[in-house]
Image (cartoon, rainbow, N blue to C red; front, top):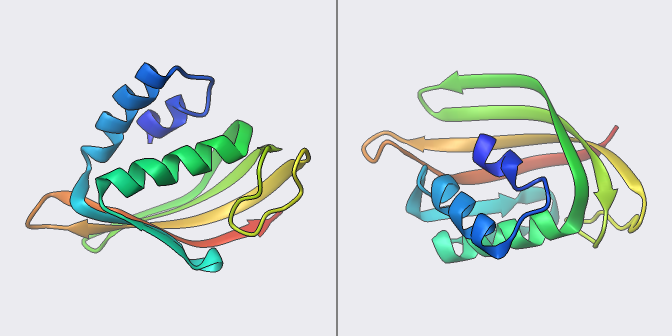
Amino acid sequence: VHAEEVLFEPFTEDGFKTQMEVMLGVFTDDCVMELVPAGMRWQGRAQATEFYRIFLGAFEGMKWVPQALVIGPQGVLDVVNMTGKLLKKFAGLDQVGGQVHLQWVIYFPWVPDQGKFKGEVIYSIRQL
């Protein structure tokens, strides 16, 4: 989580690559990043990197406030409230240039035999 939040602040390309190595280190090689509400999915580490480029490029000044965190043998469920400025259309959000106040529900499925997460499944992005 901290590696991702570092990228919420302005970063260089080298900084992005360094943080992505840290972030992708917790995911399986065949990880999947999925935005269920938008019907979008990225598979594998190269596409996961592309997902983060798209996601991070869509917002400015992101702030995440945790609401709930559930940790179990199947993985982690994270509910967070996010604020920021929408710079580009993303996952059905189209108020470009405006502030957004969103709640995200994200599931990180756990792969016990690899000791890593299978990726991120974003089930909900709703306006607050």
